[in-house]
Length: 183
Ligand code: FNR
Image (tube, rainbow, N blue to C red; front, side):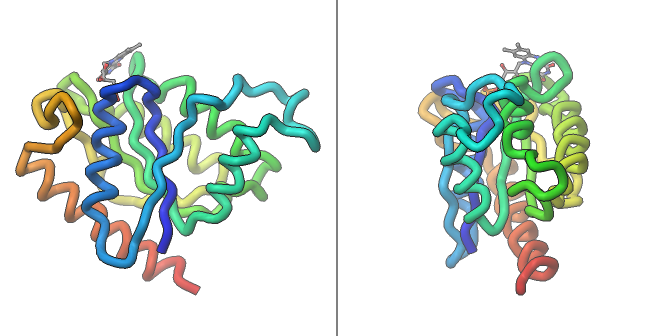
């Protein structure tokens, strides 16, 4: 099985990028994941969404289409998912209901410096995934509150509690994808 991993944060030292990288390291044997950047995706403009789409969009669409499932880590910006991630999903969402996201399994997680761990952003992200007919993994929210305490500066996950939860989350997600979507 091959996953595509996306972090909704572009910054160096992103806790969400650290989290999704830790999730990739925790994947069971035989499951691989590529982490893609959304930094080059332009602001959505329907005029550009014709035959000749921006290169970064074409590349990302191909990567999503080729993946068996998605792994998305989102920050929470002002109680919502970041504009850059929403914008990326908007590009991926066309043609409506027949896009590369339709029926694609997706697990979501969030890391935040605050006490609610990005849970509100996850609620919104789930709504967007529902709109594009993606299949959000229906597990309780995987959140890492006060995540700056769980990772070293260079992104090593040092929090044993989060490590244990993350291992269980990705293992259960892969089992769910296999049970529900294996052909
Ligand atoms: C934040 N942050 C934040 N945290 C939170 O739990 N709820 C929120 O609504 C917000 N709002 C918010 C807005 C903006 C514009 C920024 C820059 C930050 C703090 C956020 O959790 C923190 O900066 C994380 O470190 C962002 O994720 P990355 O970049 O580390 O992955």
